[in-house]
Image 1 (cartoon, rainbow, N blue to C red):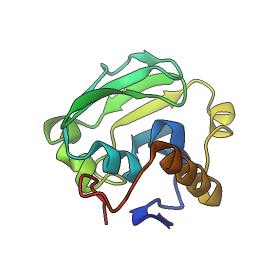
Image 2: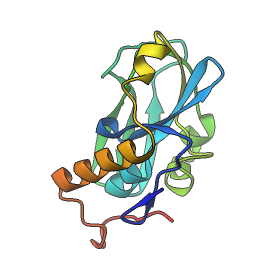
Image 3: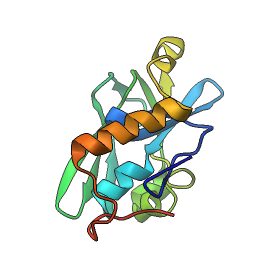
Image 4: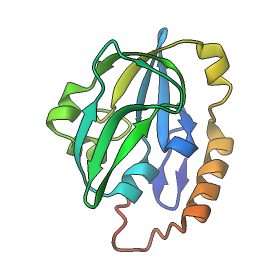
Length: 151
């Protein structure tokens, strides 16, 4: 699925308000920054995750993302225990920009209540519609030279 030139793989779940994607992996969840998140942040210079084993409450940060002009807390759309951070991304944060849906994943969580949390996430056309509305509210202009459209 594409929206304004940005890819949103249809096999993933999305939390548009957090600019994140989620992928079920057994009884754990892998989380990463969406293509839209990459586009609005631009080049990512650092990702500093919380420590493995840390319990993350919903809406609380699982790490800090540093980009050209600022830093932002990467907030979790669900509660759970941080099982692992992507050490490759910690060493080379540009992986997030280069392959946000693959090698650029950020953290793996053990959700507290995955069945309930899963119902709050979006997929398919519902996810695209939510990202389109978020882009509209953000005043996102994919033609802006300061925006990094990923292909």
